[in-house]
Image (cartoon, rainbow, N blue to C red; front, side, top):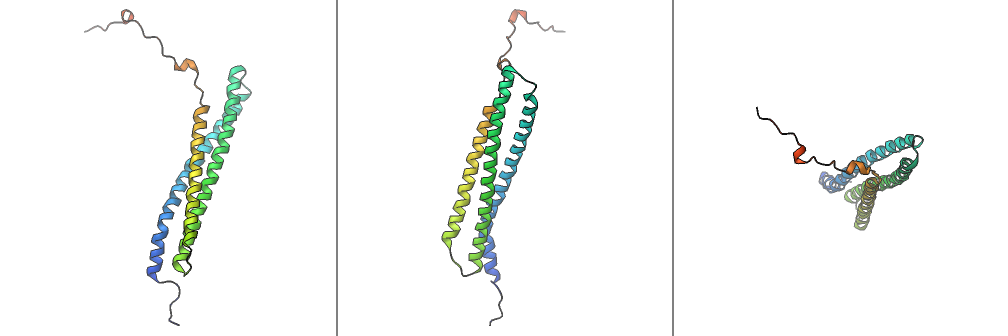
Length: 167
């Protein structure tokens, strides 16, 4: 027995350096989750506002409220799936870090497992971003701007303008 217990310091440092790259991806996914949960909170607030308007509207205004409620329901579902995909991606990154530590601190070698787990994390993250873009498109589709707000007022004719007096 040589008196050594566990891996040497150089191996540990090497593994920590290798695991640092996926850890940065984990930070990025966490930031994305922060954005997604913020969007979900805004969607929920908008849904509650529309539900309050539901009973107070009729005619075309009521139809717009119902249409936007339907879009809001889709947006909640899409953001929810985006959040799920981001969380699964983060879990995959954690598994990647664990595999890297296992491989670096033992004699176990399964580079294909490390590659597969990392590719899974990237695929899940990509799917999350696709859902994020879908939600943004739904959000812009849901915005209703009345036509009267889009019309410019008629400019006064030059003869109707008041002239400035010089003092």
